[in-house]
Amino acid sequence: MATQTIDDTSKTAPRATGVGRSLKPLN
Figure (cartoon, rainbow, N blue to C red):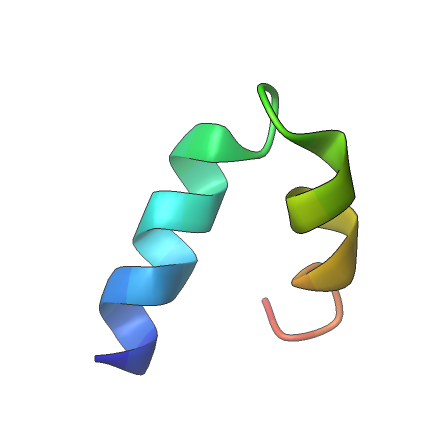
């Protein structure tokens, strides 16, 4: 599940900078 979340974030990173930044350290 964690991998799926990262994958989703990677795709939404350029769209949602807020979410991407929050999950940046997790990546």
